[in-house]
Image (tube, rainbow, N blue to C red):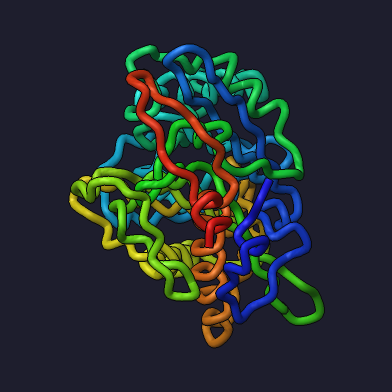
Length: 340
C-alpha cells in the first residue's frame, strides 16, 4: 500500500505520529467491510473512538458543516449537545439508514434500557455517493456488515479502495479512505491529532500537489458533485467550542489541494476529543471539564490542516482500480506519479 510520502509528497511543519494515522490517538480503532461483487463496489468503515460504553460515558464532540449537500445522520444532535455517544460509521448514501439501525442495535446490546427507561441513542453515520463506481440501488450494505466493521476494528488503518471508500472518486482519480496524524506537545507529554477521510470530492483537473504539480486524469471537468467526510480525533482536552474551531481548519487542508467546496459537494468535519468524558447520568449538578489554553490552539489548527491534506493524499495514493457497473473506471494517482 503506497502512501503520499512514498512519492515524496510531504507538506508539513509538524511531525506525524508513529503510525501517521488517526489511531495514533490512544484508544481509537478503525475497521472496514469491503463489498465487491458484480456491479457492487461499496462497504462500511467504522471508527470506534474509545473502548467501553460510549452511551453511558460520552465524548465531547463538534461538527463543522463546510457545505451541507449531504444525507448524514446524527450530526444535528452532536452540534446541539456537543457529545458523541456511538461509534461513527461511514458508508454510501443509500446505506445510511441500515447503518443507523446497526448502531442502535449495538448500543441497545450494551445498554438494554435505551429508549425504554432512559433516552434514545443518537447514532452517527456519514456518507458519500459512490454511484458512478457502484450500483447504489443494490442496497448492498447490511446491518451485519456494519456490525462486522465495528467488531473487527483495530489499530491498523487500511487505506484506499476499502470499506466505505471502495467506490469513491477524488479529483477525477480513484479516491477512498485515507488517514494521517500530527504530534502535539502538551505540557509534559505528547498528544496527537489524527484524521480519517472518506474522499469523494474535487473536480477533475483541479488537484494541486504540495510540490505545485497539477496531475491530469484525462477526464472531463464536470461540476463539483462529490463529498468528503473528515473524522478528526485528538487526546488534547478541548471544549465543544474549541473543538469546532479546530474542525473548521480541516477545510484549509481540503482547499490546499484545489477544492472550492462546490454547490453539489457535501463537505463535513466531525471531531471528538478523548480527554473530556461526559456521563449520561451525573449525581452532581456540575461536572468538571478541562480545556486547552486558547493561546496554544494554533498548534491544533495547523495539525488539523496538515493531517487533512495528507490524509486525502494518502487516500489517492493508496487507491486501487475499481470498475463500475457500466465499465466506468477512474485512473490511479499512483500510476500518474510513477510515470513522472
